[in-house]
Length: 244
Image (tube, rainbow, N blue to C red):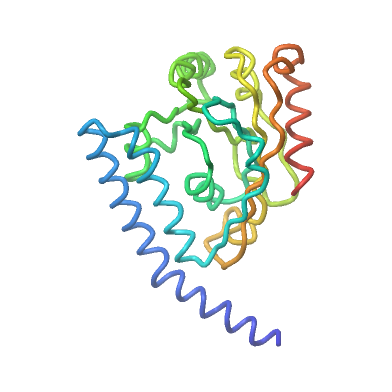
């Protein structure tokens, strides 16, 4: 039985290297060019909402990854949120892009601005690049980001700041929570479960599987106003870790 499992894993890795990786990069380039063109033609919001979503869903599909979504009843239509989620794998990004039922802007480290196709397209789409090595510039960027959160547009953070190793959660950075406080926005905690089993951090191996997207009850604006940043971090950390 174990030898059969090993053989199937080996065969699937051949499929990964000969099909998934080449097709995923070609698909990424195609989507990036399509979104860039539509943005140039004035349809950037439509491209962001619909075309970019296809990017994540297609790559998940060719990898044989199922996505289960829980507790969407917690999300209020046309409400802007500061969304915070754990980060275990590159596949977190595919799941969020493909299935998060919100119009949103990423907050991402400025180094990703140099990623071929992805960096330029994310810039055109209005996603937010933060230079974490320059505190003054980072603060200014976060202040400007608030101007984009209108008409139900949310902002998305991985508050751990980097991918963890799949064992629990790293400490959360303060940026997301301070933004929620400064803009009087509710915080929507999200648990992404199972992505590390599909593609672990710092690994190129990919396996089929199921990833769960679990929404938690939002931390309301009134609580965001009244509690300290550390208390908000603790509450969101507990909610997210509960379902890992």
